[in-house]
Amino acid sequence: MVEIIVGLTCLIVGLASAVVVMRLLNMQSMSQARQQAEQIQEQANATGQTLAKQIELDARNEQAKRRQQFEASIDTARNELQKAERKVSKREDNLDRKLDTLTTKEKYLEDLNGQIKVREKVVTASRQELDTLIENQRNIVAKTTEQQKQKLLAIAHLSEDEAKKLALQLLEQQCQHEAGQIIQRTTERAEEESKQKSREIVLNAIQRYASEHTADATVSAIPITSDDMKGRVIGREGRNIRAFEKATGVDVIVDDTPGVVVVSCFDPIRRAIAAESLNKLLEDGRIHPSRIEELVSQVGSEMQERIVKYGNEASIEVNVQGLHPKISEMMGRLHYRMSYGQNILRHSIEVAYLCQSIADQLNLDGAMARRCGYLHDLGKAMDHEVEGGHPQIGVDFARKYREDEVVLNAIGGHHNDIPATTPYTPIVMAADAISGARPGARRETLERYVQRLEQLEQIATDHDGVKQAYAIQAGREVRVIVDPDSIDDMKCTYIARTIAQRVSDEMTFPGEIRVTVLRELRTVDYAR
Image 1: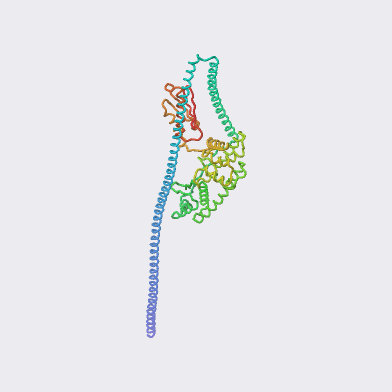
Image 2: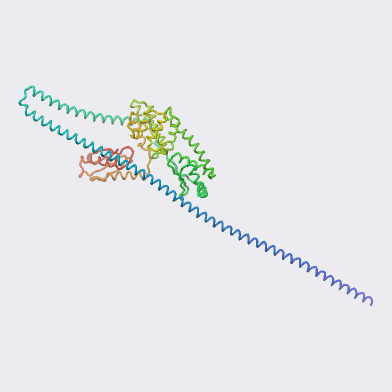
């Protein structure tokens, strides 16, 4: 019995202990669950906050991106508007320059028209004077004839001595007339021989001086590797290009032409400095206003040294001694001056050698002729900066540095602006014409060349009786074929002269153009 009670007691105690243990375990699990729930809730809150921040950040990034796109589109539109404004400004400048050029040409034409009117008055007065002289001569001849008739009528009443005396007087008058004809023929023969001799002298001079038939060209278009580099040249709101134009004094034209920036300026020195500076900026890659000013100043100093070097080398080449350094420097500037594609410095050297060759054959001072020929275009180095024609500019500059009067007359008179006072001036004129008119000296565009040939043929075919006309020898000669049934040999001479006169009046060309009219007889004339 006692054992049973003990067993029951133990069982009750165990059950109570189990209940207590189970309650403790239940309380512990609930605490853990509560902690886990709190942890999950905290993690959820953290995750929610992170997602909210990420969403807010993404929204801000999207807003910033759209803002950048909007600003980029506005900048693009602004740049296009600025480009359009610059184009309009450039076109306005070009129109202003063209208007100034047209005004200058109009003024020149008015002056030329005034000169023509003055010359017409002089020619009219000369014609009237000539008509008066011819009429007087006719009256004298008629009066003399009438007197001779009267004397012949009275000859029967003269003595033998008186008749002989009168016959001798008539014979003397006839001999004087024949002597005048002989003198005229001799004079014409002497003029023809002098022309032939002058041609021989010029040809010998050309043969003695054999220059390379080359011509340099100015470079005004600068190649650009990419549109991005073109944008860097322009700079933000055009500040780089404005700084470049201000530093160099040139106009920079940036248009839609791919890979090209055009540098425009009438002064060849400034254009050369600008082109070289822009090429160096493109190679360097650092393009901003301060760098532009620094590089342009550096290139300008180098260009000045180069100009002095070119002048000294040219003076040594033509062996002209005692030149003032300023004159030598100005001759070096001609290295960058072109005329119809012909380099003026090389042209001056060529004229110097031709002058010496002609002077040597005429037994004149070759050194003086060479000096005159070398300096004849000195004024072209300054005609962009000083008003007036280049002959007078050159005379004033050379006189300032005490050049000889012979040289001054050659400089000022090589275009017939002043009378020639020495034989060296016409020598310079001849050498200048030879150098400018020889084949290869000056270039013209293919379009202009074809137009000139077509105009030459059109002038020739405008005459009645002309069947065909062909311009040959690069426009140096035009051959005209006439209808032999309607045009006789005597009229061929008139047609040749008329065509030559029209070509001289209506066309501009170096040298001379030979007009050859062909029928049974070949008639030749020259347009000068």
